[in-house]
Image (cartoon, rainbow, N blue to C red; front, top):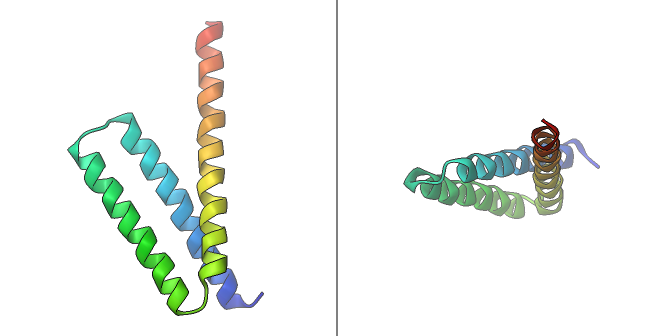
Length: 90
């Protein structure tokens, strides 16, 4: 793996984490701004993946995005289940 592939993977990782975090925030308080933010997230991720495809870094970027997205979703799920456990035991 070259440094440029590592950079694409890091960019994908940050995009995935940001995408999942933004989705979680939008789900907490759904309103019109949440819908606009959702479209903005899709555009940003789509443009980043398109740029990666043009410059030959689609695979590391997509893998980085998937790892970041699912790691953030898993972290949010783990935090949520711990909060649920605490609420149930009180």
